[in-house]
Image (tube, rainbow, N blue to C red):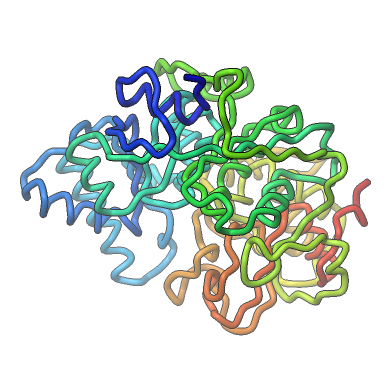
Length: 431
């Protein structure tokens, strides 16, 4: 039987030669990730079901990354981190990236930085954007606390094999287009339920020419279309990135020629345009040029979707030598990204200097305002803000206030819009 990439990965982790869409199988996990939002609940269920003195199935395969509500004085949020710390010490979990010297930032970016995302593997995480790691040619998906507790105790999970949708991008990507534009185009086409419990596989020279970070953006937002997982075939670019960050062995897998897909959609990437998701849904799509004149009072560059090194390099191309007209926040995804924007230069200025001179407000690494949070979370919306953001969700209340209007766009479009104070096509600043 011809197998898609998702089927082949799941088959390997069930000990079977093949699996079929719709089939329920026991899947062995390579990595379980949790964070400060879902970790305490997962730990509580684990101890309730397996016993107060139970041991996790493999402490070396558990990764814990506090990242959501870190820069806050909220006592309950801080207690969540205490629970993670106590559990990691009790279980001998070495891959616990504690607040302080070991702090990393957003889990979905910290995982690949630390070598926890490897081709051919299975990653379960207590966060819907765990699907980001599909960019590395693995099966990566978000699960709930109860499922995560079961994985903690057994190392496996009962999974229904998803059907696969295939999205092929052909052609050369123009300099004003980013992966965010590609995924917003797809979501606009199929809707927020168009890939419900399906794998979304991305292919074509327009995808394989993308950097690893841009591939991560594509896979990150499959959940916004209802997808179970996103996946991109691992190539030399993928393997070079991974081998630079881990000495662990891995075995890439590829789809069989002639594998069956539930459907396949093709795009000419050279003909796509900068794209925006209007409030209050990622599928409420429009072209940036169609929204010219829509006034804004806040811009946000950050999150697992838009707070990576290349996201900031793109934004700096627009902002260099110019001043923003609205409040503009730069919040790196991780501590590594924060260090890099202070090191990397564009001409004779670091990215950090470019942002500061442009009038941006610099934030500490983490999820921050991407999901609102406690009242003192950095950049939390306080009222009827109109925000253009490089994040992944824009439903009411996502960034704090239910009255805020949130537009989603690429870092290029966010930066261009910050300069004008209204939604702006980045082609007004770059060709």
